[in-house]
Image (cartoon, rainbow, N blue to C red):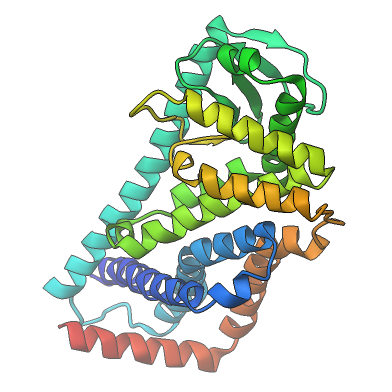
Length: 333
């Protein structure tokens, strides 16, 4: 019973903390629209990414550094406490949520890998300036121009896109994809999918994911547009051309890829084009994001770990945590 109780408590705590922290993250983003409007799109994307992955990270750190040590240190092995039906139900919901998240992440990875292999069988390697990853031309009904993969990214471009875009428009589109590569957006997309759980049944969870995807696209647009006003206008023209080539009702279905115009992007093309025209009109130049912006997710995660280790090393804190756990078990019994 000792092991079963500890396992159930860990799972239930993971679920409760993740749900509570996710709700706080959504509220934080809803309260920041005015301040966020003054930030660059890349800064907004990084903040959204942090808000999305912080809840599961905080939950995992709390369970690993606080709950588990306090339980092992202060819970008698011959405990008389039992796993109540309420606690068991919470633990089961947590197990299902984790299983769904892991399953979704693996399905996305395998689906992307399988489709990438399918494309490579009929693809032609092409040489493109301005990008240092392998580029391939494929025949596809969807006007694909996308960086696919996380560890070994490749650029795939549909033949109809190559035939339709001018050299300047193609260069601007490639610069946009370089923005995704510089920001490691595919890796972040994979982490976001792995962090998904049952909370996504609540619309606010989906809203954060959509907000990050849209902001990441705008950030890649700004990355491309920083070179010159002409590049901004050429990218706007490329977006319009590609959006017009999207077949009615069709969508790009590759999960771990950064599309120039993807699944949800056709609705945002007008806004992106307006933004690019505004950038060109103002002769926009971005000196570059502060180094801290790119490192912010890693800094915050490391801060969580260090703070967790420091606080959890205090025996008094573990006693308080164990007392709180005892109270929760009593309430759920």
